Length: 168
Image (cartoon, rainbow, N blue to C red; front, side):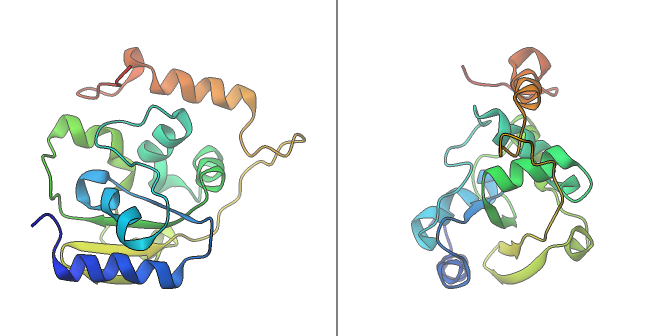
């Protein structure tokens, strides 16, 4: 069994606390990948392995800083992330697989990041993401073209953190 009844119940609960269009993020190796099926909301990381989307890749590396890092905040807003799901690894996570998602390693007190606990079930915990401030450019885009170029550079295989491979 890949998911416990408690984890399934938590993911189903998300459907009742999320608004239409909101998305779910988190390390897919800890359960986020299953949230779409049970919560009825899109997930940002629907497959195992690093994201090819540079905005999503940046967020996965820098989520913990979303209240201080305007780019992480802008990525959060652009991707419409309202909830993160975290917990113990349930599938084939290795240090190399974990590297692209280090931003979702939460401190002992997740409320210090502005996260509000929605609930826990099985090995999973879900949090509502707090507010943050980003630069909303004149084009109405949250992330400027120059920032997108930076995301592309960060997500390139030559700039990947040690042990992280970006699939092409």
